[in-house]
Amino acid sequence: MTEFSSISSFHEALYAGKTTCEATVRLYLARIAESRHLNAYLEVFEEEALERAQALDARIRKGEQPGKLAGVVIGIKDVICYKGHRVTAASRILEGFTSLYSATAVERLLEEGAVIIGRLNCDEFAMGSTNENSAYGKVLNALDNTRVPGGSSGGSAVAVQAGLCQVSLGSDTGGSVRQPADFCGIIGLKPTYGRISRHGLIAYASSFDQIGIFGSNIADVAQVLQVVAGPDAYDSTASQREVPDYQIDFQGNKTRKFAYLKDALHHEGLDPEMREGYESFFEQLKAEGHSVTGVNFDYLDYVVAAYYVLTTAEASSNLSRFDGVKYGYRTPEKGLDLTDFYKKSRSEGFGKEVKRRILLGTFVLSAGYYDAYFTKAQQVRRLVVERMRHILSEYDAILLPTVPSTAFRIGEKMDDPIAMYLADIYTVLANLTGVPAISVPLRQHSNGMPYGIQIITREFDEGNLLQIANSVLQEQQVN
Image (cartoon, rainbow, N blue to C red; front, top):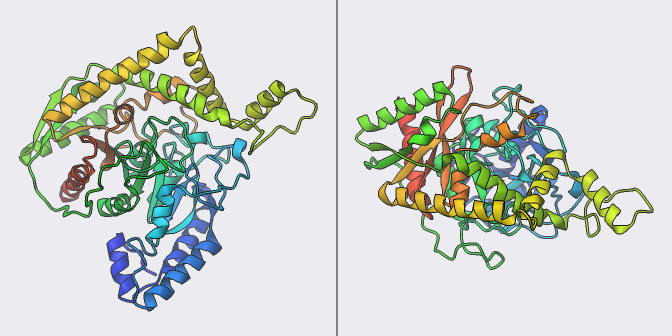
């Protein structure tokens, strides 16, 4: 069985009778088995995936085309529900829980013939930037097993990076798709807030969360987005806008107006070698006829603080449902009154980072501090939204680093949560403002690890975003 470089090349061979869905699934199952040490998958749906592949093959032999994603092998992050399958958000609090329904995104994948091969490891409740917060062990970066893959969607990123599926789904609340994509040298897309339904996505911070897509090429990411995007009666925040055709010609050489944030490029936290790489790339774009202009963004030092105040407040509310009574983990200790029962179940079920964020969120929502923190953070969010809209009204896209450094060493930042949070400085902008953003590989650092560039466009302008991203990738290949 030969690996195919894209969904389209796989389908070309599939419908020409040169391969089968079953052979493809067996290839990925073998690879997953060989790569268990990476800990990317929490569970592999081996029998089910093979049965589904065989059924798809039978339909193809009859001359049918069973969907736009027929036979495409996909992994899903362990915060996305799949009916009849376990979903734990990588937390003990949901250990053994089986989902009663499927996320809308999952249903749409299945309707188009995709094969969901397993659920992927992540930081607990999508809270983390290294995938070291999972109750089921850390995920390893396939390029360097001493380094983290990024988070919270680390398993989803490594599954694509290591060739353990063709594409994968993650979730992005503050960079949890783009940051691990950067660390792993692949593509990670966070669409506009509301472009993909959140129905069936376990909530962290509801006004920030968005399902995202990992892939090894832009065409695959665009094809999956085409399938999963669109209105949903089960999610009132899902946009009612018609989904445009993302299956566009990526070969255009359109001249564009780019902005970069001077405050981001010259921030003291950015790795100097990476800064040089970005400056070199901007000069390359100018030489090709594009306009690249530095603009001021005075709120950069406030975005991380505002993000963590607002997301932890929403998490405090969203995670209150996990109480040990209705489902999930409950303390085995007997003879407790109701208050102590809640305390014990939640203290034992949640991990350290989740508890930290719940406590912080509860604090900023408390009567004495609500205006000082939560209200002030909402005001900062409004200022950031207005500034971003102003910039994007004058430019085709914003270019900025995805993260300040390449992948951390395992354990490097676990004892310093503030340093960990500050690593989100460039990615939280898109979540605060709801705009689409993508991270694509750019260069290789002298330490041997890849780093990417983040591209941001206007709301619901994913078609333009994907075109620009594809152009960037092609230009890097040529140079």
